[in-house]
Image (cartoon, rainbow, N blue to C red; front, side, top):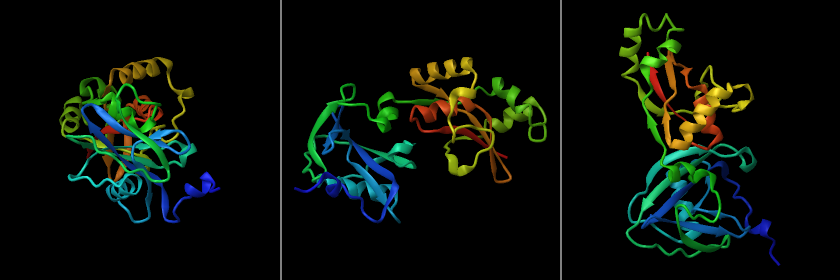
Length: 246
C-alpha cells in the first residue's frame, strides 16, 4: 500500500509560499476535497524562480487538468499561518460562464461547486474574498493628532493635509521593515481594549479605514492605525495602508 505521506511528498524546489485560483460560476466556487479530508481551492506550493501567476497555472493544471481560456485576476495575498509553513498565499480569481469539470490528481478525492456561504469548512485565505472587504481612505483631519508628532515632516495641519491627500493605497508587509508597528508580531495583549473593540467592529462591517504609513528617505514608518494592522493580520485580511511618500 502506498502511504499518504509518499503521495503528498514535496517537490525539492517547493518554497513556503503558495498560489491558487478561485474559480467562480453563478455565485458558486470550485472546491476540491483533499486526500487528508480537508478542503481547498486549486492551489499549491510555488517553486523556486516561479512568479505567483506561473505557480497558480502550474498547480491548476497538475491538480485538475484545467487550462483557463482567459487570465485570472490577481486579488490579494495573505500571510500563511506558521503551522502551515509561513510566508504568503497568493489568491487569483476566474469568473467562468459555465461549470468547469476538473480531472482530479492523486492528492484529491472529490470536488464540488459550493455557495459562498455554504463552504464545507472555514478556509482562511478565502475570508477576504467572501467578506468583500472594502478599504476606505483615512480621516486625515482626525489623524492630524498623530501626524503632529512629526514637526520636521509636517510644518502645520495645512501642510499635513496637502501631503496626505496625495498618498496612495498599497499592500504592505514585513519585508518593508516598517517602524512603529506590531503587525509582524501581532500580539493583542499590549493593545488598548477600546481600540481592539473598535477594530473588531470595523472588520465585522467589512469596511476598514486604512492605516497611514510614511516613506521618508527610503524608510517606512507607521503613524496611525497599528491596532487596525494587527487586526487585519489576525483575521487573515490583506494588510493595506495609505502610504505617503515624502
